[in-house]
Amino acid sequence: MNLNQWRTDAALIKKSAELQGTETFQAMLGVLESERPVNAPLPRVGASATDHAYSYGQDVGFALCLDVLRGMATHPEEADETVVADFSETNDYYNGK
Image 1 (cartoon, rainbow, N blue to C red):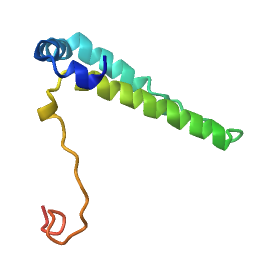
Image 2: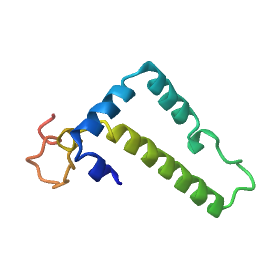
Image 3: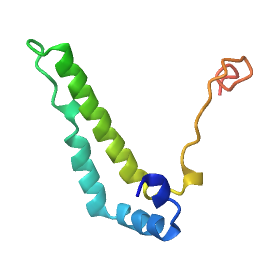
Image 4: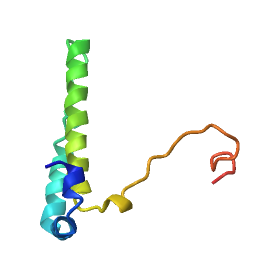
């Protein structure tokens, strides 16, 4: 089962939201955030480009895992919509918003 399949079941989303609303689960997420690979930097001397690429890949995977866990409690229609850059002067950036 993937995240999109999970999100088709309202009961699963509801139970996940209830679980994620608990103090214990929030504390667990806090521990996971603290344990992210990015919080253990590589040594300044002796780390190769491959070491840095590997470390970056680990952190990206870790962050994706946390996002999926959080996303399991979110209905698809509540999820952030994709922002498309159009670089026109009519967008909110140029209007000061």
